[in-house]
Image (cartoon, rainbow over all chains, first blue to last red; front, side, top):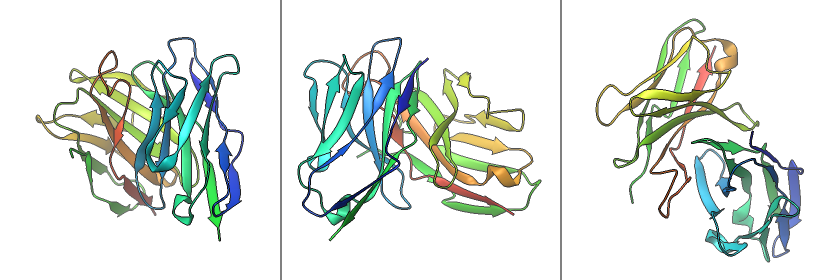
Length: 111
Length: 118
């Protein structure tokens, strides 16, 4: 079965600082990985995805993630965060015709 | 840009009442889903639907839940007799393909329907 672990429930960071949100996965099939963002009182929006090819994936809003097969990780990074990046971030792995989500990491950006 | 739309955005109901949440998936998508998010918790899979039948359901999706695609555009989730613990945000999602294409495996989500059971 597929599963995702997001070790950090909350990550506080100052504006313009770099951030890394951690995600580790477990999958017995071909690995497709996703990061979704949920702004307050909104739905889920795709940030980026890894299907195959280059292990460094670039997404929207300046985010990127690196797929590391040996460490079974897919950490999300941004070199300089903005106040507007405050949101919940969900890592997800493809299961059988569905996505399996992690518990989410709340990114709190303060001035 | 095509999007998944959900109605209502918020529904308040009394315990024991029936609730129907409605979704209009993206028109050329083939796979449809309901997920649930209890306040402050993870996004949980409820059910997937393909080719006019349930393809998978979680243990949360018990006999009080049902899904239907009554016409070519709507996809509904019915909760027959709501309980307090059904209070959550319910997300509908759709997907184009699981085997090929740029959107392989990607789910497109609606804005959600917040259900409050009193």
